[in-house]
Amino acid sequence: MNEPAAEIAPAAATRLRGDDKRAFVRTLFDRLAPRYDRLNLLISLGQTTWWRKRALARLELRPGARVLDVGCGTGWVVQYLRRRYAGLQLEGMDLSPGMLAEARRLDPQGTYFEADVCNIDRPTGHYDLVCTVFTSRNFPDLTASVAEMMRIVAPGGRLLVLDSFPAPSGSPWALLQSVWMDRIVPILVRPFADPDAYGYLAASIRNHVAADELAELCRQHGAATVEVDHYSFGSASRVLATKSA
Image (cartoon, rainbow, N blue to C red; front, side):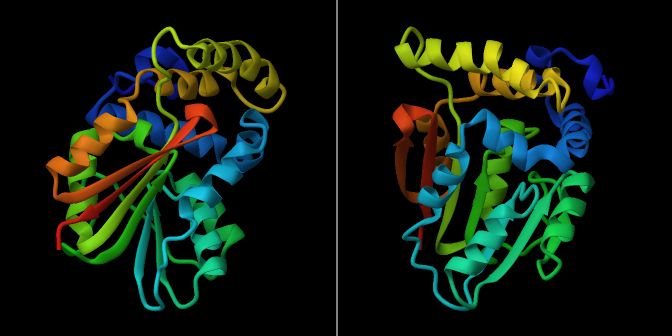
């Protein structure tokens, strides 16, 4: 396929897989990188910060723990965890060079590297915590991505996924989600960014798996226990998988 990101309709882009999805996501987020955090706050009415803080609270990470943020974007999670927990060995990885450039600009002391979630160049069992925040909808292959993230988690370690998932069909929240993302968000972002880019993000929520399905994928790839927590009436959910010891 290899069409420029701007030429692919939002709904069609959510169906891309493999290298086509990688190329689309890289191009899209390279374009959004300079304004990404500010626009995220705008379209979520500030809730993304609250969701991230709640998801990352009470992890009881000990000094020396190895942590990887997959799809780190501008480095928010890495910076937050450094402030909250002492002595962590933190790394962030992303597919988008534009996002990584922004992360390094905002956080010169951080460690960031470019990589594909389906092929992470780290040893098996290397990390005590792998987290990925509002990124799983963009993965080129969700099953392969979960398998790879679980591979690099140490026995007894955890995989944390925070994302927005589709609302149950016919529910009041499904209608509200649709009106907000499809009608209001494009108007909000139009002065600052291509509305089609945020059209893709809205479509990616509708076409994502349910949080419980993602939890089951974690179980299939080595999780002994999985907890699912919902925030803001299901606007976002956290899947926390603990790998078998």
